[in-house]
Amino acid sequence: MIMDDKAMQRAIARISYEIIEHNKGAEELCVIGIRSRGVTIGKRIADKLSDLENVSVPFGQLDITPYRDDVAAGGTDELTDIPFSVKDMKVIIVDDVIFTGRSARAALEAIMKRGRPRSVQLAVLIDRGHRELPIRPDYVGKNLPTSHSEVVKVFVEEIDGSDGVAIFG
Image (tube, rainbow, N blue to C red; front, top):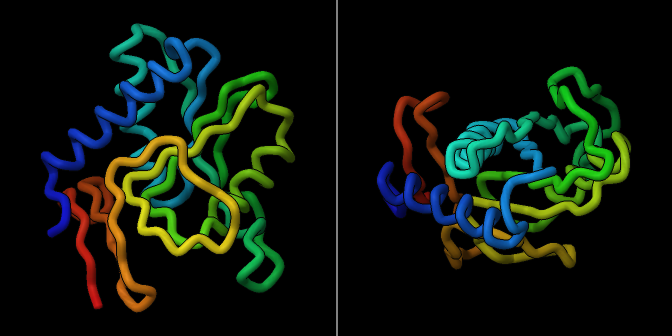
């Protein structure tokens, strides 16, 4: 394991504090997690922000499948649940791992179709490098240099039964 449950908790807390510091609080912030594990991590960040700042930080989940450029066209937004307007909000997109940057690009496109946010920031638990697009996360839990052949897997209690990060391959 590259990260155990305690290391994940510390990374999520650190990301949350960095978000608050950068945005001078949690006012006008919203958090949108990319399905599937980005949703869980995003929810934890939104809850931590709400607890730390004593405000309600809106949370939504985004299915980027219809917006991806590396899969066949089609799909719907039926798994997307963003129950608030992103217009004039500071949107924090959350994903578990950033690799090529294509998921983040798809998430940007999906969010922009819903309105014009004041700003969009990207938080990831793991940055493994190898970008194909000029996209860089604003908040990173852990930088984890990998080879192209390796696979980084994030485990979350809510889906997998335990928290952790491992490399395979």
